[in-house]
Image 1 (cartoon, rainbow, N blue to C red):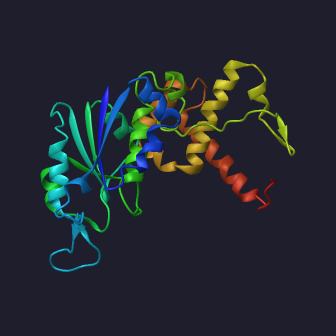
Image 2 (cartoon, one colour; image 1 turned 180 degrees about the vertical axis):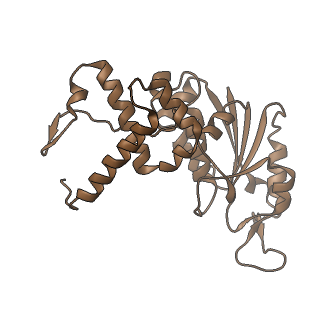
Length: 266
């Protein structure tokens, strides 16, 4: 079981998160526990002050070190299997592999910053790693913390069926194939015939080809990783080489792009 410890000025933001959907299911199955800590409880004065102007000048206010250090100490977090993260635009970008690595830890501490940032001494003394959702800035670390925990929780045993996880984007180093449900025809748009054929071998072939297609279309950079080709080779049963197959799909995508007339049907 993973124990999450969240330090935040706005712990109330997490209440709905922990009581909804897959996350709630994971908690009920005791796949994880969580502790919320408002570090304003350890403010430096009776006015609830937790921030101050930066030395040397600059825009905005910085979180002072004392409230965060004191809140962290008050949690009495076990040292075994511990990982302390701080959310920052300059941090390491989170990806699927990183999420899987985090599932190996027993105690994950998430420090959610706010305002302009946090005193560097917090990062130097408490934090193991700074992490980021991407190249953009948010008002605080609460939303990234929820995104990170959601991604971790869905990987824990008993929360989601293993076969469902295996077909998700990035699990096989490819994006997930396109999916359809009833009705088979809607506003003139038809579900690919192979998916309604009942031919499981052809359906699996379609899923692999479509995963390759979607990856080439939306995230061609994933093919820079040799693991992507290895995963394809484990599932591909055709006669032509994988390189030839990928080039063929690239040409098809280019043809579609060239012939597109810009009209959408909704």
